[in-house]
Amino acid sequence: MELIDLQLETIEAEEQRDIARELDTSGESRTLKDIAKGLKASLKNTEGFTRLDALNRIGNQVFALDANKPHNFVTPNAPVNYPHIWTSSWFEWVQYDGSIMQPMVRNAGEALGVAALVNLEDDEQRFDSTVKVDELHRIEQMLAGTEAPFRARTFTGLKAPAWPEAILGVIDRERAAEGRSLYRQHCQGCHLPATDDPAFWSERYWSVRNDNGERLLRLKIIPAGEIGTDPAQSRVLADRRVDTTGLGIDTVVYRGQDCTPLQISDSSDASFAFSLGAVVQETTDYWYRQHGIGSDGQQRMNGFRPNCLQAPGGYKARPLNGIWATAPFLHNGSVPNLHALLSPASERPERFWLGNREFDPVRVGYETGEAAGLTELDTRLPGNHNGGHEFRDGEGPGIIGPLLSESQRMALIEYLKTL
Ligand code: HEC
Image (tube, rainbow, N blue to C red; front, side, top):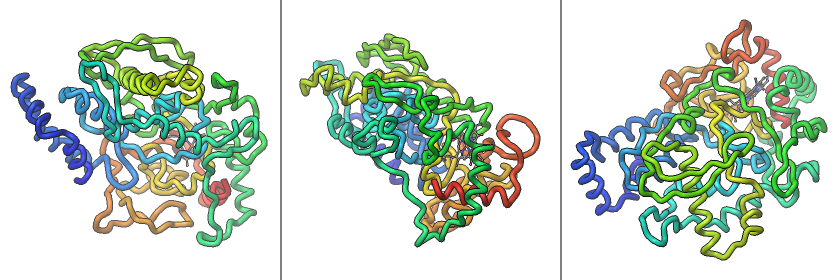
């Protein structure tokens, strides 16, 4: 409820009248009220403690509200769990679907999504904004650390939290060692060697460099059909279209693994992914001009990476350092604890409640019982599906390894606590 109010409050009364008038004259059946109603209903299923549909929200904020084009509004349908951000400054591609390369575009895009103001009117201040580009850079530096990790063979920025043995119990080292060999056998092929394993620092994984010669970590991106988890989020950038006529977009972004240049201009049927990348870039470019930042400074603040975008239709497998602290699991938070994730989907809870802060150190996640004020997650609803990434016998989409015995699951969990 509060989220909706906030979003609607960002529209001034004057603008609301304009939108309503426009809707009347365009004969659209959807009024602001309908939008609000749809939003309210969808938020119940997609948003709450630990989760929201970040990408569609950004799209709605920028292309429906900021651009004053209500027909660009879509009902949020692809919730994600708030991601943990340690280590990710050094990934070649970030976001759950491995879609964005440049730190500044990622961060400034997020700022626009949470309602930083941007001028999309047709005047000289077009793309002027309240985005604090210098602060975003400062935060990114704090997260990334002072040294390039491949050279230092360690991460100096934000670190994954260590399992607090004094509070949550002593780790059984013998079981953890058993878990380590299971990890090497069943997990490493996708999630890479653990960050505390010397093998992690192989050039094989740090196979790409940014424009400053610093190596970045190349993660595996697995097609949604193969990993079998809920596909909705992987489709947003690939499928959503927006009307950008009159916004004055005129810039080059880069596309795909090879970062091929792509001219972006206004269009009544534009790719959301590239249009968003372009608007964010125009916004940061405006800030750079306004503050007299030359190309060297821009490069540095952009993390020495081009504004390269892709919509691979899959999900990335990130290293699992600190994963114990990040429940619920999967991009959409549809699996409440590690034990459930290592169990066949039929054994995972179909409905559970989010927002409880009591930690379960055995299954490794939060308590999920029903209580007043908590968010219900019903995995039967679209966007919330909890299938895929399954270890069970048989073959098929989403089955990525053999059934693990109870004792193997517990050994793996014991090991994951050490990462
Ligand atoms: C075939 C490749 C593959 C294998 C093998 C694999 N994973 Fe994953 N894993 C992924 C992908 C891709 C995701 C992201 C899926 C999503 O979010 O929808 C993921 C997500 C996860 C997550 C959730 C991460 C988060 O931020 O919520 C955990 C935990 C995890 N894997 C643990 C494991 C463990 C433990 C093993 C071995 C027993 C394993 N995985 C084997 C590809 C794999």
